[in-house]
Image (cartoon, rainbow, N blue to C red; front, side):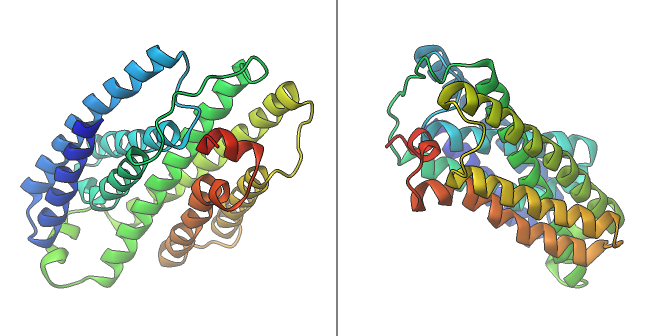
Length: 270
């Protein structure tokens, strides 16, 4: 895992230098270094999975590490389709590096899933959670790229940003990631309710993480309403997409720290 952290750090540096000095070649190399980081990252998660007998479901270390992995993986998939969007790595890879680095300094205790929690619905709940949050990170990165280019017409950054797809394409991709993330988050909430009923005998109890997950879902519902009904596009939509991500981050990381809850106990291992 430390090898993955190191490779992501190098990748983040190369992305930053490539953007500042307008070197597409450095951006390409940075992407390949990030791909190289995915390999030991996947191996570390796989070895731990085999050892503890469950996926990255329990504890801050497992959960946040897996989100970092999926975020970088989605970046790679997007850049394979739109090579010039490699510049989005300037945002995604440093975020993934910080998430993974933060997880490395927390407890790595290997928690066991109790019989009451072991369920097929747990796998569904966690899988869609990871997919939804990673999609929101991708939409955030694209929206931020849109806003930066909207403000940058000259200078070193302008040469690199000029190679991006048209602003309408970047805007549409950000919207599509939010749309799919919104659907995945809804499935996560529904599967989590079914799992909660199996494990704790209730579908919904307004647990802090349940509540904030619902708030995040409503925030993105507002974005979709503004876009599809009110016709918001471009800069206004990008601003909403950027403002929405902190709600998701707080729901994932902040709530377990601020509130004592059942979910927090399994996420942070207390």
